[in-house]
Image (cartoon, rainbow, N blue to C red):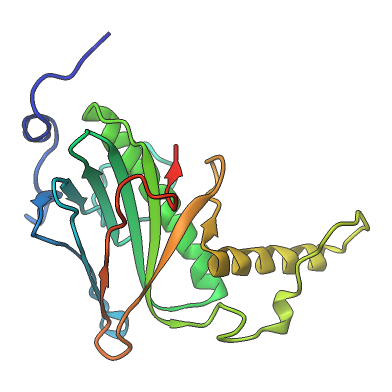
Length: 228
């Protein structure tokens, strides 16, 4: 069996090119009391999320935007935040956070695809570094929620179908899929194509004026984590 030699930081330095083409670091190693800062810099949708780092943990913050490093993947969508947390017992958690000014039905579908392909990239990086991801946590940072039923009731989303095997028209199928996506947002239980089971999702409310917020990284081994 091939085993990796050296500490994690030695492996990072030996295996991973540290900077992107524009000189921006591809990754950064952080420890408490530092925080990982995730930013969306679009003028009309600026967001800034400060992510706490639990005591005794190492955080590797990755920057995937327009890297061209994952051409072997069929999709190249990226979430704004991609973090690996390594605990004192070597337990590994992946945290994926996407920032949006407002969450709508269409944008929620995009968010799920961004999270999906970001997770594939984190799994690839973990593999080359000799790490095994134990848990995955997903989060969406937003100013305005236009997807929840109580926030913006939308009759075209339809109602969930409970039981029965009656035939449905293609339009009804489409409505039910939209409703299921809405329920995934409301219940914070997310399915990602290509992965089994449900991922627990966390909503991060940003200040409506500044677009800033804080992600209090959940304690390790939380029941809200999805184990791979």
